[in-house]
Image (tube, helix red, strand yellow):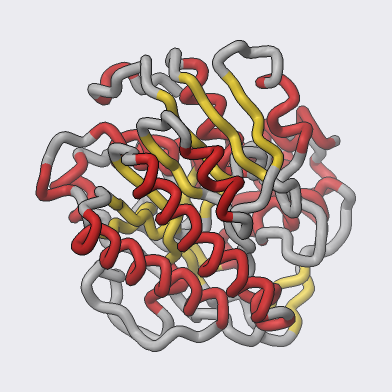
Amino acid sequence: MTIKNLNFNSSNRVLVTGGAGFIGSNLCETLLENGNKVICLDNFATGKRENITPLLENQNFTLIEGDIRDLDTCHKACNSVDYVLHQAALGSVPRSINDPITSNDVNVSGFLNMLVAARDAKVKRFVFAASSSTYGDSTNMPKVEDIIGNPLSPYAITKYVNELYATIFSTTYGLETIGLRYFNVFGRKQDPNGAYAAVIPKFVMQLMNHESPVVNGDGSFSRDFTYIDNVIQMNIRAIASINKEAINTVYNVAYGERTDLKQLITLLKEYLGEFDPKIKDVETIYGPQRTGDVPHSLASINKAKTLLGYSPEYSIESGLKEAVNWYWKNLK
């Protein structure tokens, strides 16, 4: 993805925390392709070394293996950095329900360490991965940034606390911050394995193996699925913006349409069926509803369009085609 038309100086030093993860490694790649110097901080708890192996030969890429729960490591990573793209976190609602203490330790204490280190290093701007889970039990549709409900999981609490801390650091210390509330991001490099795998890569792998995908609930739950390149665009716009009204706030990062799980599986079968016609005949299994799940999620992206010039290029259909092609090529 080219970012040269987004008024972004390619000589910047950018720290990407969680840079070996799904979103982080895609950000590292894009920044390097456009001439930036990139520092990747990751402890490989959930990030994958193979995601950044091709980048290690690039002289503009520096890997720091370390944990955001260690303040000294955060200070080291932020040294002489212009911008921070903070992606490091323990994701997954079920993970946070099973182990709320570790999720809080990483997502809150680690986040605070990064804010302190960024403040001390006088970075120009701190852009962080927020979450649509912050909307909690709010029934408003579409979701607008200034109306949220009560959180439904420990994970949602941690991501909301991140937003509160960012606001305090903006008002108290003058650190420019922007939070990006991601809505169900998917795409290349997203891990299909493990107990907390996201739904799209998990379904893709099951279908490629002629295994029945298991849906939590009756398939009517819907999400605003967002392709990775839309997320990359928002991150770059967030650090490149010179609009003072655009900083020290949060944005939805989504496409602005919702797809239910039945529709999702239908699309996956169609696109994967082009490689293997037998996939179209794989049956779907419907199981119990998952604790902490929000029934429906749909984002308003008007604020991002107005203040940051955001214009998502990939719909669920075009994004899924790209993702399916990548999975078939790399994981089959």
